[in-house]
Amino acid sequence: MAIDLEDANDGIRVLTLAGTDRSGYLDTPALHELTERLQGLATDAGLRVLLIRGNEGMFCRGRKGAQGLTKASAVAEDLNAILQVNAAMDALAVPVLCALEGEAFGFGFGLTAQSDYAVAAEGTLLSLPEMSHGLPPLIVLSYLFRFVPYKRAIELAVSSRQIGPQEAMAAGIVTEIVPKGEAVARALAVARQLAGFDAGSLAALRKFDNAFGEHLACAAFESGPGQRAVRLFDLLPGVIERCAEDFDRFGVERAVGQQRDNRHRYLWIAAARRVMTVRQRMRETCAGGGLRSSPSDGVCPIFEDSGCAISSCRPSATATPKR
Image (cartoon, rainbow, N blue to C red; front, side):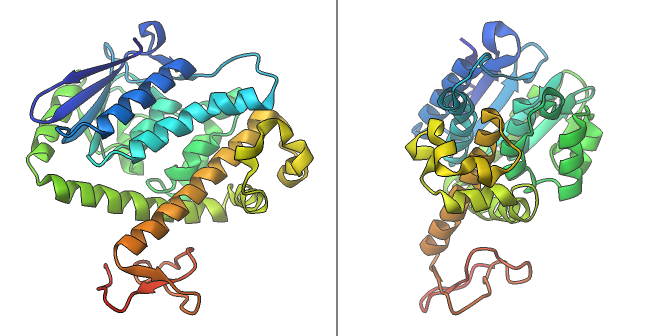
């Protein structure tokens, strides 16, 4: 199996990314397996903390996409595997930790960025190598701005360069650095500390951070490289559900401009879809917290100083604004 799961006691579960053929690379079936593991953990009543680690000193060398795909629907299915993992991680109500040794490339980089706490060993290398293969890492960028300033994220994406743990920590991707070979032990120690806190409080904290932190990332994405993608999604809200093979007939070719390759086109759509999903999640979180949408009020009570992109939320008559 490409994904191993073990019980580390005290409500801590450990997922090991062994990779396809224990190589450290994850192909599409391995991503489906990871999604199934995460979905199973979401229903684990005893789960308090999840730790994700690599195998034999290697966190994750990246994703190996299917080769030779010519139909847009096949490309869509292949790339959807990434979105399914992201959605399964978002659904977890517990803190997610990553223990990095060796390499965290591509998908491994994105997984680390999305975690709540990342421990990296000295000598670890992180990279977004997609551009060197002719593919923009738009899915990662759709949430990376939550953690990394816009210009730094763009530089990491276009350069495909490898960075060490010190630079990753300065950028906000890594939480702390330990000597080589000690990442898992340190991450387990942090996991045990977190597992001792009130489970309900941790779940509320994670839900709040995910909803509103990702909203800020979406705002940055919409004002930058994802602007065309968001316009495209607003124009064709049902394009994903209809059929990827019908992209041209629904005008996607013209809307995307020069991005004519099926894989490029679907990356734009996938990134836009994540943005819109987070928008909806934020609205639901606002409603659950006693906030309501109001077209007459242009100020969000939570992000009033940063210009909330969600069309105006304001406190309901019986709610206390969450600041």
